[in-house]
Image (cartoon, rainbow, N blue to C red; front, side):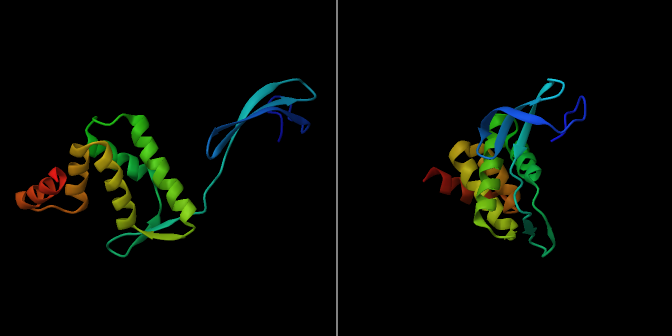
Length: 147
């Protein structure tokens, strides 16, 4: 670690705290100039590739989960809950230790969480995810929800 102010390498850690399961906050001080600053260390998971329905493979993008849930919720779910959903899924994928997962696996995890959290958001997400083409598909899903 190099001091951002004087560029010296003699830095000591004054305090360390866990921010969450994967982030550590460290308070540091330069031993030469006395400058204090904070750094954050985050565990970077091994890259995960997602196999889409078309067979195309792309890197996992947490932002896609956040964007999809935000759109389907239409403001019904607070941003912190949406971030929590994305975090839970990302942790589950990295704990899984697989380097490739099917998009359906990720979509099913989103659906399970939305079903518990908000039925309307669940129905909106499911209608796009399962590619509903008529009112009958909606009716069937509504019937399942009512049980």
